[in-house]
Amino acid sequence: MSQTHDAACHCDAVQFRVTLSDGLNTARRCDCSFCTMRGAVAVTAPLDGVTITAGEDNLTLYQFNTRTAKHWFCATCGIYTHHQRRSDPNELGVNLACLKGHSPFDLSEIIVNDGQLHPSDGGDPNGIAGVLRYTKSKDSQ
Image (cartoon, rainbow, N blue to C red; front, side, top):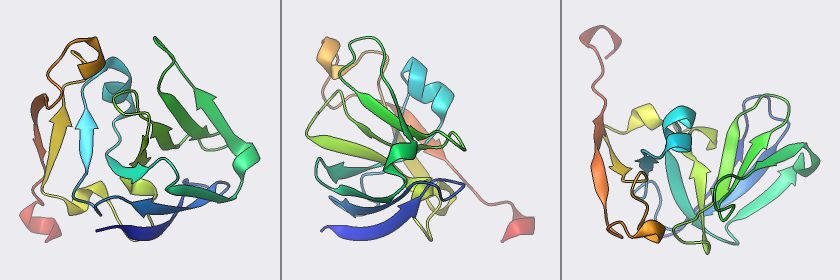
C-alpha cells in the first residue's frame, strides 16, 4: 500500500514528496559502518518515488566503498534525506524523520539490517542484526 508524504530536511532548504512502497512498515536501521554513524531510520520508496520540489541544487552526494549506494544530504543543515540502496539499486531509502508529521520515536521497534555482512558481499539477503526498541518514559506519556 503506497502512501505519499511531504518531506524536508531540518532547515527546509531541501523539500520533496515521497511515495512509500509500504508506508512505515518498511522502517529499518542498518549496522554498516556508515549507517551506524548516521543513525537514521529509513523507509522504502521505489526509485521514482522521490520528487524534489525545492532545493535540488542544495543536495550533496556522498558515496564510499563500492560507490553503488548514493547518499544525499542537505548542504546547509547536513541532514541525510535519502539514498539509492546498494542492496537493491531500484529502491530508495528515505529518512523517516524528514517526513512531515512522523518521527522514528513513533515506532516502538525498528528492525536493524545486517550491513556489516552485506547481502552483496555474500551475507544473508534477509539478514537481521537485531531490533531497536523505544519505550517512552512514564514522565513523557
